[in-house]
Each structure stands twice: as structure tokens, then as C-alpha cells.
Amino acid sequence: MSELDSRILQTIIETAHDHFFVVDADGRVRDVSPAAAAVYGMSREALCRTTVQALEAQGVLKPSISLEVMRTGRPAQLMQETGTGRRVIAQAHPVFQAGRLAAVVSRSMDLTDLQLLQEEYALLQRRFSDHLRRGGGEEARLEAELGELEVRSEVMREVARLLKRVAPTDATVLMLGESGVGKTAFARQLHRWSARHDGPFIDVNCGAIPDSLFESEMFGYRQGAFSGAAPGGKAGLLEQAEGGTLFLDEIGELPLAMQTKLLKVIQDGTVTRLGDTRPRRVDFRLVVATNQDLARGVEEGRFRLDLYYRLNVIPVTLPPLRERREDIPGLVERQLRRLNARYGRDKLMGRDVWQELMGRDWPGNVRELENWLERAWLAAGDDVIRARAAGEASAPSATMAGSPAYAEASAATPLGDGETLRSALARIEREILAALCGELPSTYAIAERLGISQPSVVRKLRQHGLRIGRDA
Image: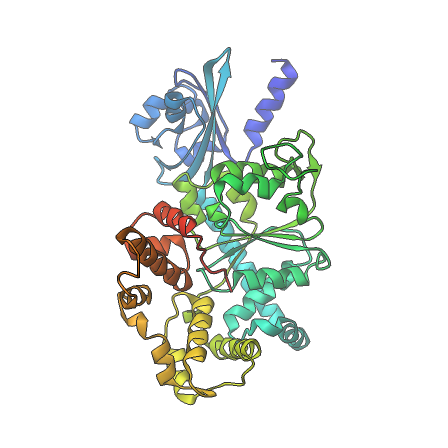
């Protein structure tokens, strides 16, 4: 290494915000960044006189990520607890020379710092919301622009104000919240407020695309890339979002291999189609959503730390419906208008239904509310939806802890004409899964309800050609 290269490397280590460790193949610490001393409780000089084996034995590193890489020869990511009681997320990568492990380079980020940044961000967000509330004209315009979203609660209006503030920028927005709270609807509103509103809004459900098709669908492919590829190739969803907004729903379901490829697209601004070698420039605004705890996913190794940092620029949390009951009347009226238009009737809500609507917790949020209303609408014999009709529509929910699936299955004829036991069981399994897909928000919820693993649920849904409902 030249003297200039050595100085460049030393400058990177000494000025980086992350805490670097450079360790020899035998565990001896070669160098650490100066900021690491405050996190690990030892001076830079003391750290460079010891080994990661000794540091782990002393409880300074709990555990040592460098030892994990030395053991496996592969990159690793884990949550560490330091001797000073801090929690950090660490990543480490092997360095090979002539095919043999020569060193390990690791970096870590103190989550205490991240927590302080998030608290500071929340404070700024509250101050900004207070500022907007003082402007009456701005509030009136917001009311008109929200339109069909039917936002009445103050907490959701604060969400709307924040989204309108960040809409003119290209900052990545991470929408958090339970399934069914309306993340897709608010992502579309963000797009309408943005400078890219004339461009496309590409809505991608990361949990709905089979792993085997994900790369070709997202990144596209060139002609002849694989058997059955379309003549002339095909632009992927990333390219289709050119000049507009790319909305990745259920980002927590993204396979690790695709996380790596997506990170490269975000960093480089280019995409390479499957089977191609020529990168193509892409320009889109990225909005993602999840009902999962991505930070926990990072800790468990299911989500890349560096991608998490890239996505967590503007985090926006949409509260569940039970915490904003003021929105229920507007959402009910909106759904009633849709149902009347769809079925060509003019039904009304009876007064006795409102107590039921306002009193429920709606674990499935807006999606569950809308499904419940559609069942009640269809069950009503005349043009007034009454509590009794609504109760009849949801009566199966009383069976098996709130799911209609088992009631529907038990009401079915055990064996049809010429039906075998195997085909009958498959039919009943499909009926149960179809009902749960309409009521529960995710494959994880269905797995918990049925007492089976989440991968088994995914496999069964694919086998029966079923899909879970989308966000409202």
C-alpha cells in the first residue's frame, strides 16, 4: 500500500461516525477508530494491544462479531452489548489474500445515538405541526386536499401535515403501522402532493411476488435471459417508476438477496436487468411501508442494517383505528357510498349500528371495517342496515376466536358427490384460508391463528392461489 493510500485509509477510520475495528486473522486488533473508546470503555491504545478473544472474555464485546467472521469466513451482522452497557449494531466483513483470511473489518453504530436522533426528529415534527395548526388558511387547504381519505382525528391530520411538508422533496419516506391502517392511501396522497405527481405511481407488494419471480419483476430482464423471456426483454418495476414514485409495501418481506440489489440501486441510481451487463439510470422517489419492526429484523439478521439506514429517512407512523375513532364515521360514509355505487342501491345506516361500529377495536383496522360493512350491506334485506343485520353478517366471527373460517367450513357438506377424503380436506383447507385472508392482515397473523409456521402459510396460499387483502 502506498503512503497516500495508507493516509486515506487512516483518515477514513479516524473521521468516520461509525466505530471501526480492523482485526488480524488471529484476532489481534490492528486499529480502531478513536470514537470507539467511548462506546467500548477502553482507550484506542489499550484496544490495539489486545485481541478480540480477550475482549469477549472480559465482556467488552458481547459477543465479538470478528470472531464470528473468523469462524465462518462470511460477512456477519449482529447486536452487541458493550462493557459500558451500550447496545450497538455491528457489521463485519472478511478480507482475503491469496484465498486465505487475512483480516476482518467491522463497523458498529451506537443505537443510543440513533435513539437521540429519533427523539430530536419527533420534537421537530411536533413543533412543525404546531406551526401549521396556527395557519387557518393552510388548514382549510389541507381539508380540501385530503378529500376521500376522510381524516378527522388530530393525530392523522398531523401525519398529513408532515407528509405534505416532505412531499416536495425526494427524501425516502418509511411508513409504519399495522396492516390495514391506510399506508397505501397515504402513499398515493404523498405522490399527488409531490413534484412527481404527473409521473407514475408504482405500487409493489413485496410479500405477494414469489421469490423465484422477484428479480425479473423488479429489475426486468433482457431478451433470452431465461426460458420464456419475452422477445425484446422487459423493463422491471424499478424502471417503470421513472419520473414518479415507487411504493414498496411490506418491505420487511423483501428477501435478503433482493435487499442487497435494492440497496445498490438506491446508492448508484442505476439498475441492471437480469441477464444484462449494461446499467440503466433510474430516477424515482422511494416510499416504503411495513407492519413489522425493522429494527428487530436487523437484530435477527432478517434485514440489512445499511438498507435500514437508507430507508429510515422520514419515518411516519400511522396509528391503528382504535386510537383514532373520530375517523370511523367518515370512513363508514365513504364505504357506504362505494357500496351503493357498486351495487346500484341507496342503503342507509341505521342508528343502532353506530354503537357497534364505534365500540369495536378493529384489529384489522380500515380494511376490516370496510369488509365488515360490505357483509352488513349484503345481509340487509331492505334499504336500512340495522344492528341485527350487521350482527348476522358477522355472526360467524363468534366461532373459533373471531374467525368465520371454521364456521363456514363446518357448514359445508362433509363430502360431495364423488369427492374423496383428500379432495374434501383440500377444499375445506382452502375455505378456511380464504376466509382468514379476508379477515387477518398478514401471513404471520394467519400462522398464529392456525398454530402453524409462517412459511407453511405462504406455501399453502400459493398452492391454493390465494392472496391477502391489500392496505386500505
